[in-house]
Image 1 (tube, helix red, strand yellow):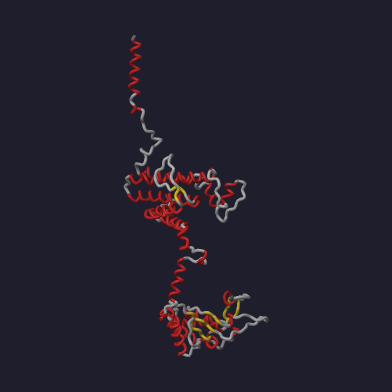
Image 2 (cartoon, helix red, strand yellow):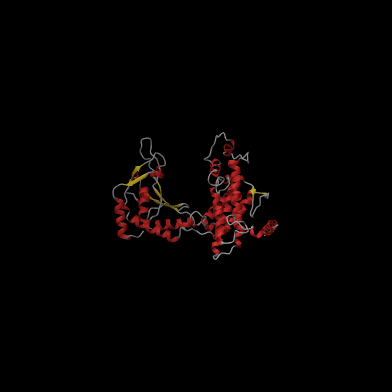
Length: 419
């Protein structure tokens, strides 16, 4: 009888204990759930680290994406018997269930996006002692989400745009490439506001403000509506809209008398001033530039020593003004190898419109006057490298004798070290 009572007692005791579910319903500290996680700034950082962890997956940056981008570039070519790889070079994706390539990239990119969405959903509710630290976490998540969507848009065009926490049974609708790029632009513009220009040594590799701006620029280049602005259409001759706008401004200005009279007025001023001082110059003045008569200016230099070229060199030495030789250097040699002497030896000082001020014209007048007063110091030139064609563009000449040293010495005696 005692044995029966003892057994009954333990049976009742065990049944009472087994009814207390609190004793067995204990959270597993090694398996955090959504409800137990996302509580502290440390959780936020761990959640962000999980996004970075996706760089180590075969569908992202440890294997297949390199194949995908290389084979669909100008550098990629394949005759592999593996048709799925070979067709990538032709931008043909006939097997979207191609596990090692298409499926893995799709899977791992959306896993990374899912983790970004977790950060962007839960971290805003976490209390940080420093709000800037929270902003940096969210900015990184937005950058990384934009980064993965950029790859998806490049590889697959139209893809589902998932911006919240997804569940296994979800079937998100497909969005257009334009909608995906628009979201990328939004994420990157938000990220730029909080990402630092530079991270510390312990955080190298995290996206910076510059990285976000660079990816934003790449995104704009992929958005077809922006291509004409930056690259132009083929029918534009390769010019951008900005260049076409500049041409339009130029065409309008060619009809504005005040604009088109600017250069001829300055040219006439300089020609008249030089002519009044007895300096050899071509008259009447024209609309292209002031032409010094080098043959008269340096009458002591024979044409075979290129007086117009010597005058151009001397002008640059004493003033920093560059002129264009229009004389025998611009000519050619005959069948006997002799120079075909030009009818005139000129130095052209061109006047592009809207560039020069009157003070600069007066500066040129002053230095031309000085050079004319010291013209006997200038000597001739001879070739050191004379190409058979276009010699006046790419040939090289040197002074005959030491006239450059003498000209520089006189310049310094009169002007010191000034230009």
